[in-house]
Structure formats: structure tokens, C-alpha cells
Image (cartoon, rainbow, N blue to C red; front, side, top):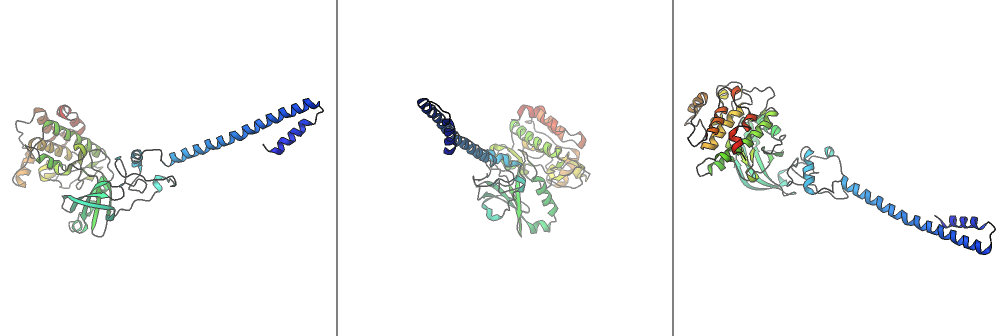
Length: 382
């Protein structure tokens, strides 16, 4: 309230004819009251501004995500598609240890779907030791420079891929694996290429292949507890794939990796296919794991993965594949006759499960949801 207003009010109160003493006293009283109101109004205003400013600051921080801890930011960024600068990661970040957002108060937050995709190049990585070697290239340990996030970098040579006419197979492998999100399936974070090579940025599995772990055992085999744990994890991943009409077609110990704490991961999707119509004719996979319908060049369905699951269960418990022979012809004959023998140390429960998976007729093989509930799995799996 201005001093002019105060004066006009004081003049208005002074107009009535009152006694000298009483008039002075009345004016003094009114002046005190008006001054008190003025002071009260002036004191209220700053408090109101402070509250408003504080509340705006809090809303701004929440909008930019600064209230969340970095791990929560990493987890929440998993809804984004492909790799972006916003999450500073390798596509979607489901692992809290992955690269996270480095935002500041001055940065403007944009909708996730409007942010530019991260363009990867070999210069983004420090390359370490070789982890493995394949038909079309090698796999290396690598570290993304900005975030220090450790990955496996699979390097494929375009010339070799072109010479063997498997471009479609590589393209299909990338398309399928990049869309998969399951704890027992190795993540494909992103990919890029140059004139000579294709680079796949993969989840790093520090404990290597299941085959190496099997060979490292004193008797070259696992016990019931370890075998059942691996088979249950694989069943879970295969259920996930089959629900999405994906057939893996190359289940074997060499294609299964062990991540942190020994968690099993399906790794190689080179022979996988998305087949909603459920029938395929391609002969593919590893000879020891081929199902009878492939040996006979008959159409096959996702039930070929059930046969491979039975072969794997046998190999984990025994140390070698059930139809192993000196040559391919003998192996094919054994497969078509379902001719295998289990050693005496294999339990009756495990023998029963294997017999329900290694069945000549694909339609009679035990479904995955029943495999998980099998007494051998229920008793031994962790």
C-alpha cells in the first residue's frame, strides 16, 4: 500500500470535528493500524514468491528426471527404441550398470521418440582380447569409451558373407535377436558397419560357453542339480521364443553362454527363423543335434527345439551327445532309429524326461510347459 493512499485515508479521518485530544488519539490509533497492515502485506509477498519459485524448481527437476537416481534412469530408458544419446547406452538399457544419462539443469528434456539415434563407429570402442572365433569373423571384448560399459563386439567380414551367400541369414539373425528381451537370451544392443565389416554390439557373458564349462568338469559332465538348472533356464527362453513364433534350430552347448553368476544365455541366432506358419524345410544346425524330420528332409516346426533340448539334457548328464558316431551316416542312422543308451549313473527321473523329448514323432514330444513341471526339474533345478 502506497504512502499517498495512507495520507488520503488519514485526511479523511481527520475531517470530522472532534475534541483536540480525542482527535489526536484517534488519528494515532488509525495510523498504527494502517502501518501494521502495510507491514503485514509487505512481509507476506516475499514468502509467496519463495514458495512459488521453490515449487517451479521442483517441477522442473522432476520433468528432467533429475530427482531419480542414475540406476532408475537407466531402467526407465528401457522403453526407448534403438540406441540414443539420451540414455548414452547401447540401445535400450535394462541393466542398471549400463551407460546412463548425463543431463544438467540447463538441458531441455525432449520426448524419447524425437531424440536422434546414436550413430556407432569402431572409434567408439576400446578393443580388448579375442573371446571367440566363428566362420565369418571373430568376437572381441570391448569397452564403450564414453560410458566405460563392457560389451562383446562380434565382427563379421562382408566378403566372406557374400561369398557364401548368407546375407539373408545375417540380416535375419540381427532382426530377430535385436528385438528379444529375456534374462536367458543374450542381448544384441545395436549394430553398425563399414566398407569391409559388420559389427554386432552384444551383451558380454564373462563365464564363456556352456561347452567349455562342461569340458572343465572332472568327469566332463554335470550333476543333476546343475543340469536341471540349465535345462529349466533354457526351457524358459524357448517358451519365450516359441510364443513369438521363433524357432532357434541350433541349440547346443557351444551356442549357450554363461553370464554373471553362471546365468545361462542363448547366444547364437544364426539359424533361427521367425515362422508364423510353423513349417520349414531347411536342413540346418549341428549334426549331433539334428532331429529326425530334418534328416529326412521333411517340413519341420518349432518342435525341433524340443528334440535338441533332449539331446542337450543327455549331453549335460553323460558328457557326449546321444547319437555321436565316427561319421555322419552312422549318426543319421542312430537318429532315425532313436538309438541311444544312457549310463547307469543317470537317474530314472532324468531318463524319463529324455525319453519324452527324444521321440521320433514331433507331435508326441513333451511340450515345454510340461518339461518345466517335470519331477526331475522340480526336484533338482535351482
